[in-house]
Image 1 (cartoon, helix red, strand yellow):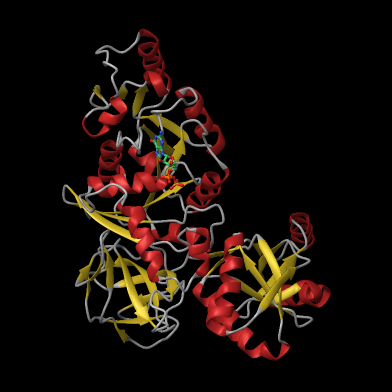
Image 2: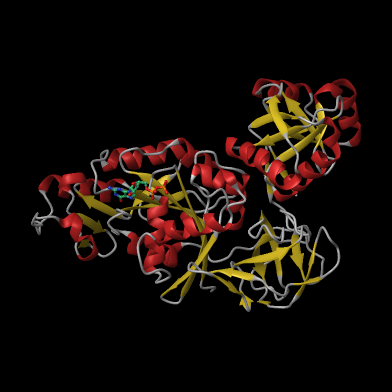
Amino acid sequence: MSNRRTFAIISHPDAGKTTLTEKLLLQGGAIHLAGEVKARGAARRARSDWMKIEQQRGISVTSSVMTFERDGVTFNLLDTPGHEDFSEDTYRTLTAVDSAIMVIDAAKGIEPQTRKLFEVCRLRSVPIITFVNKVDREGRSVFETLDEVADALALDVVPMSWPIGLGGEFKGVLDFATNTISRPEGDSREFLGKRTLADDIPAAIAEEIELAQGGYPSFDLEAYRHGDLTPVYFGSALKNFGVAELIDAIARYAPPPRPQPSDAGTIEPDGKEVTGFIFKVQANMDPQHRDRIAFMRLVSGTFKRGMKLTPSALGKPVAIHSPILFFAQDREIADTAEPGDIIGIPNHGTLRVGDTLSENNKVRFTGLPNFAPEILRRVALKDPTKTKQLRKALDDLSEEGVIQVFYPELGGQWIVGVVGQLQLDVLISRLEAEYKVEAMLEAAPYDTARWLKGSDAALKAFTDFNMATLAKDRDGDPVFMARSAWDVSYQQEKNPELVFSATKER
Ligand code: GDP
């Protein structure tokens, strides 16, 4: 079995994702000092200061990849931007992982962004391990938290450990598998304070534990891997508590690299041919060279540096001379990579999100969706003579996945769509900086968009009647621009022979 574990952390801002990431990397020996994740973030921001937004908001807009090893297992942690205004990058990153850790704040439970990301995981039955963080602080009762996860997400929950007291009462975590208590000591001395730890579990908590062990189902690996059940761990990222148990759980239970559906049947990870797909493109890591890094998830085969692969959109082979592996401390040139690994491929715009790369150019991976935008805006030019530049910019940026673009069938005003507000700021700033185009975004009379699918006759019948609500996306595919969610269900009901799709698979 493969020793790769490729995963992401999903959470709401402030739940502790950054802190947990740092501690996971520490456990893996990838970094030596706490705080380095953020320090590295600062260094990275300095490198990419072309992107004013990142600086102004002090956040990293783009996801990255961190690879570390522990006990013979290689972990690939794909970072999803943690800010409230997240983008399609966040969603797409989840198409490249085999499992996820869901971090929730013990006091706050399931928050909106956790739920959104969870829904994306559910689309693909991504298995989820839950980490209830900040048990060193006052929180809700453990039962309340578990019930909320079960109810809100319609998942079976299985507590794998139990906190002995919360906040000021917190004395450690009982691991159900080994029936041992790990206590806050060692690197959590600061937390230990002057309190002496009772050896015994207080009676009230012993009762809780008995109830829990009788009341919840026991862990079922198959149900977890199908995405029907989540094992729940308790801990404190800040105090580095429960983190080793969490990483052990990923090593032990999280699935190895999965097979990937394609138009030529399912491609197994142990297939000989090297195949992969691009799930993200990041531009301008180096503004001097205007180069882009395409992030490829390897699906099958052993990749070797210098190998020739054919990108599906290009149709002819290119040699991958300087692939990048993302070790936590630095980028490194990759010599080989295995299924589940992520490779950064420098290019000048030849690689697009959703592209398949393969040796024989016979496979096209499916199931890499575009997500229906939640915010739509009209793009207006300050200088109307710059139409051509604007079109080029919108096409480029939509290819990169920064925005989606829709060209209405009637009228000349182009529409951009995003899933997070931040993408709009990035759009305006990049239009100015890279394309010298000053644009304004105006309210559009649409609320969302749906890709249309159906027979030619059905599409034509719909188009003839609804020209004013139709647009083409950058690939020329028909899109219904909806004024409201109601509009979508109304049209769907009236046109049962058409599919109004909230995602578009490429
Ligand atoms: P992110 O927005 O999810 O990346 O959250 P951060 O990792 O930046 O954490 C948000 C805040 O919660 C920071 O002030 C952290 O120090 C704090 N925090 C994270 N984990 C814990 C924990 O286990 N216990 C306590 N008390 N605070 C924590």
